[in-house]
Every structure is written in structure tokens, then in C-alpha cells.
Figure 1 (cartoon, rainbow, N blue to C red):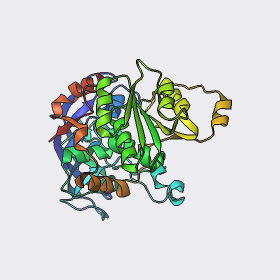
Figure 2: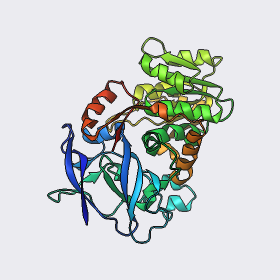
Figure 3: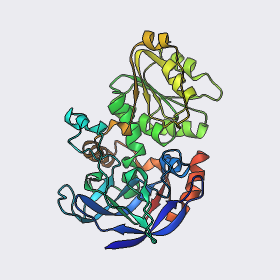
Figure 4: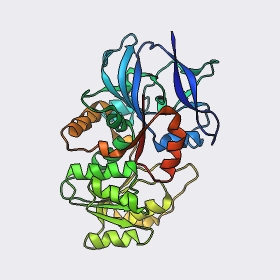
Length: 361
């Protein structure tokens, strides 16, 4: 049976989104139907609307979500109706070559629901990052529904499903930040400030936030930055070196996704330091670096894909840290909105006015 609910659709490249009635099937084998309680407005949804990821319009947007499992299909054992879950856009298969090498966070065959959500006329909808949670119900592969402590507030918990996990994981999993390290994070939006929070959790001694917006730099201080640099007025590479005895940082994270800020991260790290790219670039962007510098500086240049996370391991851990008061997820929630305010939330995000707008149902 198909369930008729309201959902946010991106119908054409660059066009404003619309709220429409969509049809969501009951779960089949290996699938779960989740009643969405909250879903964050993530920059990736805007990328989909702009056609910067794929051209498979129309899209059902939304992916940074939490909710209650309503129904499960045959052969589902990891969740049951009534469970409070965070939706993950990666659900490791367990059998691909990466999973078999013990690296499930790089799974090459991540699972999604096999059935399509559709418009009322039957037009299939491409679910953003395999979820599509700007809707009252979302159909996902059961492995995408990760059970967590139901004491968590849905608005805060859902953010762990994408942006918060990307930033925390960039620091802890990809960057390997540890006690006493020095860290710079370039770009202090939602993901960048999550990377700052992750560096603080990991015990970094010096945490430097870099941005061109003083408002975002104030947010960075609230999440644990010990120093901030406005790179609109100051050379960030020199300023970072001045704050680290002339050496540069152990880990430099780039959370913007632009060649110029990546170069800043590259030159702001210490010898044998680590650069982590967590900002999402657009397809046409290119970067050029002197190969001798790449060789001579040593260290590691890494990309952080979803924070190199294993959702079943990381989501419950971060929710527990939140409930213990050690990870301030509430501070990421700038406002709560209704489904018809998503387009407006995109514009607020572009203007840098919010860390996260969160749709509540």
C-alpha cells in the first residue's frame, strides 16, 4: 500500500522547491518505513536543487533526519516498530571488497531502499543521498535506520545523520586528532564547527577557527575554538603559524570546498602534518600545488567522506556524549521550521545566517 504524505520536491535545476503530495510505499524485504520527526536543511540538499550532484530530477530532498520506525519489511532484524532512529546515507553492505578489508566506512555497495517514492502521477522521485526525508514518511534500507537513545531531542539528533557526523568524523576519524594536537579548521559553518567540537572532544590543545564572517567565528568559539582568524583581513597561513610557534598545525581541516582555502590548509600545516578535505567542491574546481612541496612536506592529504564513519558505531556514541552534556548538539539548531519554509531556509543558509534550520513534523 502506498502512503500519501507531503514532501519537498526539487523539480528542475535551480528552480524553487515545492511542497507536494507524494506516495511512499510500505516497506518491502530489507526496508523500513520511518515517520520523520525532524530533518535538518543541509547544504547538500541545495547542491541537489542546483543540479551540482546529479541531473536526475525530480528529487525528493532531505536526509539529515531522525524519527520513529513505523513498519519494517521481511528479513529486518536491526530495528523494529517504535524504535527511535537516525537516518544514515551510508549503510555498509558487509560483503564488498572494502567491507571485507575491514573498511566498511568506504563501502562500495551501500544499501538503499529498492522501491521508489513517487509523485501522485507515478513519476519516480530520486531520493537525496538515498533518503528523501523532507517528508512525513521516509522509506529507507533498514541498515540506514540506526537505533539510538530515545531520550535525545529529535531536532538535535537528526543532525548527526549528516553534517555533524561529517565534521566530528573529519576531526576524530579522518584527521586522527589526539590529545595535545594543534588544529585549524577553515570554514566555520555547520560542518566546520562540528570539526571544532570534534577536535575539542579529542583533546586538542590549540584549535584555530578561520572564516571571513565574524558571526561564524563567534560560533566557533562557542564550540571550542581557542583562537579565531578573520581571513578577509588577515593572511590565515601566517596567522596560524604565528599561533603555533612558526610551525603550523598538526591537522588542518578545510570545510569550505574551494581551491584557495584548500591551499591555505595545505600551507598552514606543520611538516608531516595532515590536511583533511571535508568541504564539498563543485565538479569544475581544480587545484594546482608544487609537487616538490607535496613531497617535501610529507604527511598526509586526505578526503573525509561522511567523516569516515560507521553509523552503527558512531551515531549511538555521539548521542550518548550529547546526553552526558559533553557534545552540545542543541547549539547547532538555529531555528525550527515547517516543511513549507525549506526554500527560505536555503536562502538563510546561503547568507550565513544559520548553522542549521530544522524542519519539524
